[in-house]
Every structure is written in C-alpha cells, then in structure tokens.
Length: 438
Image (tube, rainbow, N blue to C red; front, top):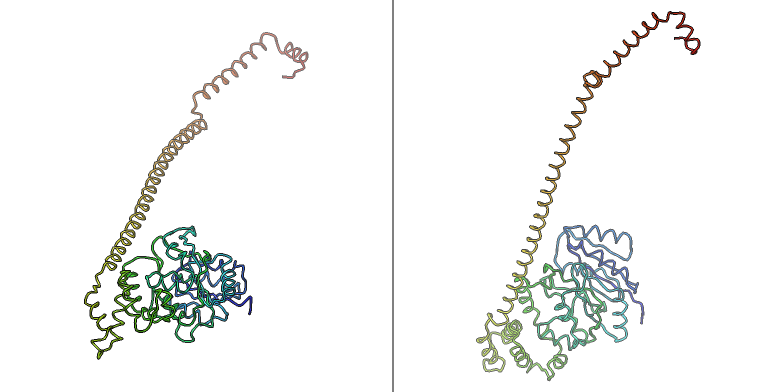
C-alpha cells in the first residue's frame, strides 16, 4: 500500500476575496506535502480570481479553472472533480480552511482503519478567523457519532453530522458519470454521501477538529443561514433524497433502528420512528414513496395500503415542525433586521462623528482665518510705518535731523568766533601742537 498517496483537493470559490488566500495558505502549509489543488472560481465579481491566479502561477501543484458564468455549487465542484489525479479526494470551500496536520492525520486515520470514506470534526470560526458559533460546532461534533451506523442514525433525525469540507475519500469510489446532483443546492453533499454509503460501509468520523468551518455573522453561509428560502429549499430537497436514505442496505438499517429490518416491515418500523420523532418532512417523503410503491392498481387490502390510507389523511403539511421552522425563519429575519439596524446605527454614529469633526475643523479654520486677518493688519501697519520712514514722515527722525542741523550750524558759528578772537596764526599753532590739520 502506498503510504504517501497523492491527495487531490477540490476547492470552490465565489466572491471569497477576504478568505481565499487564507484557504490556499492552509493547503500550502500542510505537513503532508503530496497533494494537488484544483480551484474552480464560479464567476466571482470581486478580486477572488486574481488572487487565485497569483497563487497558481507560483505553484505548479495548483490548477486554476475560472468560470465565465456562475453554475452554483454542484456544477462547480463537479468541474473540479473531473480534473483530479489522486488516490484520495478532499473538498474545501474557499472561505474555510484546514489545520496544518489535517491531511496527514486524516489520511493516517483512513489507512490505519482501512476506511474508504471519512469525515472530521470542525472548529467553527467567524469572519476574523476567531472561534465562534458554538451551536454550529455542537451540531457537527457529536461525541456519539463515529461509525456509519451513527451517521445514518443522525440522518434519520434530519441532523447532518458530516460537514462537507471535512471529507476525505478514495477516488476509486467516485462514479464516472453522475457525481453531485445539479438540482440540489442545500443538500447536494448529503445526497452524494448517501449514494457512496451504498458502495461501502468502511466509513467513520475522526473526532478531531481538523477543519476550520467559517460561519459568517451576516448569515452568508449557504448551508448555515436560516432564511426562509434556505429552509424551504432544504425541506424540498430532503424530500427528494429520502429514497436514497430509505433504500440503504437493510443490514445497515437494522443496526440504525436496533431491530431487524426487512422489505416487509421497513415501512412500518421507519414510519413509526418518524411519527415518534415528529420528523414531518421525512413523514411526507415516506407517504409519497408509499404512494408510488403501491401503484395505481394496488391491493387495497394489503398492510401497506392500510398504513398509507390511515396516515396520509392524518398528516398535515402545517405541522409543529413546519411552524417551528417558520418561527426559526422569522427569528432569523428579525436577527437580520437587528444586524441591519445595528449597522445603520454604526453608520449614523460614524456620520455624527464626522459631522462633529467637520464642525471642529470649521471652527478651527475660522479661528485661523481670524488670526490670519490679525497678522495681515499688523503687516499692513508695519508696511505703512516703513513707508513713512522711507518718506521721512517719522516725527522722531525729523526731530533728530533738525537737532543735527542745528548742531552743525552752531559748530560753524563757534569756529567763526574762535577764528576772530584768537586769529588764524594762533589756531594753526594749536593744531600743530595737537597734531591736527583741521
């Protein structure tokens, strides 16, 4: 047995520019290195494709298949699956990611236990990659769900404990034609697993949180939001895939219901279980199946007809479960409204903050304008004063000039008086003695 087989990882992306790099990096950082990554971008309208392309150009193990139109989940993942070359297959959405040892630990688990198909537990994370949504984590991580029998027992309770991005399976199980059903949007993975369960019972869940499953705060996950459209689609699709669940091997069903299941008693045992558990969608699906199984010319005295005749008159589509789901949808819508109100309040607070900041800035501008006007006035006065100085209009300067003129006149008068009194010869003698010529 090849201990290091090639693992093909199929990734589907649609408008996950915030997360796709983190998702790809989680593959690049795997402790198990023998893998290939096939990424289908489902005609994203954001920058997802360019981010993926940059990785594909730098690593030959990454194959990028951009699509021109959005063909929804089933078509997109089928496109990727047709390209795989590995002995094992893993699936990942571009907003989820693997812990670094996911491939190594899960592959080792499958080889040790001789499994054909396996799943892991999840770690629910938010848009910031922080642990969140404990209810989602509790939904998938069931301590009593390990074997195929456990998985199917939960399926009969309408609880899917097999989170799609946790899967790893042998590619020898894959059908060559019919892969994921293009008509299914909410339950395509569960329907696919059910068909694979008919090929092998070597199935188990590795109870380790090896897959980071992102639960977006705005309910943006296709599989986790509780919008009316999602609830209605899920119920409709569950009815369609009931036959796959109901027609599982009777030996497996006997383990699930802990009693012997045969073709003769399975309708009665399973329908009674559904009534007891009040699983109305499955009840409706089973009544429809009884209708088709009986056929138009059925024996009206047969036990199956009697069960059908008694029950379909009692069954109401407007049941407790139906009302509960509607209440859930209403609660989801109310939460969405609260989220929008909160976002609006945050925007209004932001606008109020900006308006207040603008007011402060306007006040500061006015203060600076006033200071500038004051400086302009001072400069103007200084210019005027300088102009007066240049034109001799300063009274102090004029006084000094007058005083200098007077002193010069006085000096000339003194010189004349001294010349007359002493005579020129005496003045010359004094100059020589003083060493002066003037």
